Length: 152
Image (cartoon, helix red, strand yellow):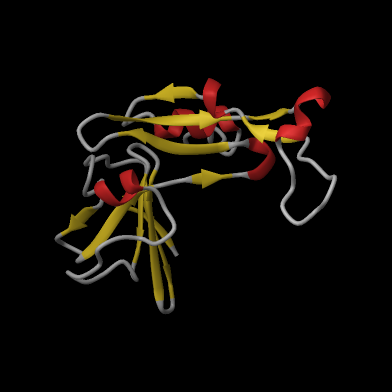
């Protein structure tokens, strides 16, 4: 069951959601882009493995729920990726699209363990669009993963 909650990070009251399953809760704020779940608990949760240093530096302890929240990384394959960039004091959201690699440059992008095969597409991180800390939803709209729902 999904319900709207007050975001503990940006205090948004319209775009932060809690989804409750029998043994699990997940959280997502589309204003600030932070997410969490009921497993991100404990004072000793130092960092999430296999993610960027910035994501771990920006973690936020939700005192009410006793869980940590982290900035999201949204990888939608052919639609691109949304990720935080910067440092703990000054950061933004970036949206990078997938672009074709010109035939003459493909040799620079070999596929591991596949002799003679090369990637034909890549994330265009160098030309990623920039969004403010509270414009995560705008980046999602640009990616095409959200839709406008008229007020009922």
